[in-house]
Image 1 (cartoon, rainbow, N blue to C red):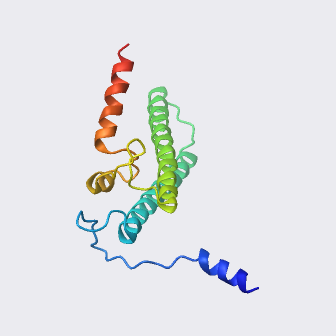
Image 2 (cartoon, helix red, strand yellow):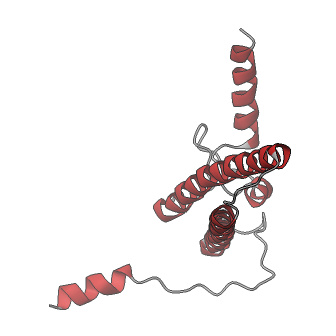
Image 3 (spheres, rainbow, N blue to C red):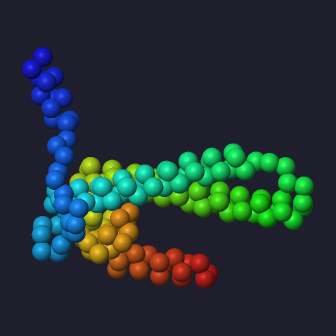
Length: 151
């Protein structure tokens, strides 16, 4: 019985205090608890915004289903709907990348380049918190992709 209590306690996470104006700095240890919490919150907030936007889209598409007699108006509405659905599909894929980044935080792999193992710059992570490669590795990857695309 005592072991069960210990195990339950181990799974509980203590909320880390993080000032609203906190910004990760180069002069603190890389991926310390505060930085990890900063990026975790940033990713969760971004994910929640995307999910809320998806709900709005679904409601809008359901409400917008109506008979439009004018062919040009109907075509315009269908084009708008198709564009909205493509945008939401991109956002759905983005949510999957956010979930993967959150898993990397939990596994202690977040912030490190998947190619070189080197730290990804804080500026890059702040601008693109789902980044999996350092800027240099990403540029090499894109150059190789471009070369193969031109074949």
